[in-house]
Image (cartoon, rainbow, N blue to C red):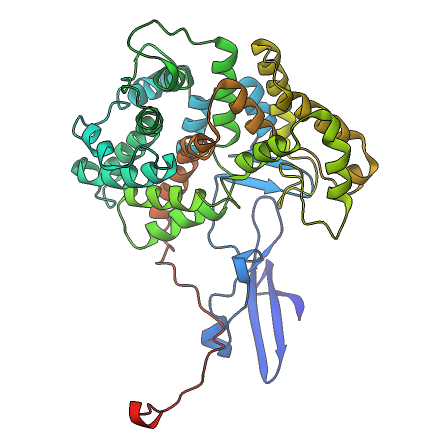
Length: 436
């Protein structure tokens, strides 16, 4: 293969030669990041496909929403570094940014918050939908079912060809996801559903619906409210990950937006994706007390031992996870505020210290990631581990909605149809059963 200029001063191609093939493939450049090879005409011109399990070397779309540089440890929403947004912004402002592409003015932000706030209630008949689930159903199972069922209640926002209906559906999803999540939790513990309150912030309202009861007043702790808002902000989008790609793939068929987000929830439920912070907390529980840490550190370093430290390192980030840098400070603030005497958090603090100083972890860049800190924070705030992925879904709904809208409006968008490398039996003739 070789690169060469073609047709214009700024146009480049990658030439594929060999086996009777001489084919030029255009190189496309983004605003940042590596060039990509446009292989759309590869099969038509050469009769050959590419083979890329997991699509880890394939750009499935063109997007203007989120950019990640794993080697540098960078994450940007619409060009803004996540560190700046986490420090100077809030989740509602970030949601507006992801959906519309620019930070809102004061008036735009106030209207956006108002519109989201007044969409937080669910259709009253949906309350009865929850009773169809077993009490011990996993909250994510409930989320997948209820979110998909929204299409049966909000017929006025399922026409994806209508831009206004797409925006209404987007607002509804962002607004109602915390309500659905809190109701799933309340149902599982046998407590009455708590209706949303319009005088509270997005994060504060969710905490209210989760932890308040009708018989006494619930006051939202501002430190916990800020921590919840921070977690939502840091998890709002993460480029073309598995669940986002699922939403786009489902949407490419023309499916309604509620079905697409439900599909995203189903994918996020997988332990390799949204369940990472739950796995990190279970690991801390397994270690139990700080005095057992050396034993587990030794096991983590032993190549023959299947034990792995969960919540350390990241598939994408080969450097420090930028979200973890931000959330580390928040985790310490929450633990100090609540002053919980739990050996679990002592284990977390000591394990964090070792991972940041031990040459083995530093050399392999096995730094604590966002899942490590979010698991600690959520546990300290009183969330059961079964709710961790649900909270991830609340935050990521904003990214899913933004990506879905971008895909629908993309003029080159087509229904997803990956190809395969077939390795089954070649063509053969049917044999009657009596001759087999």
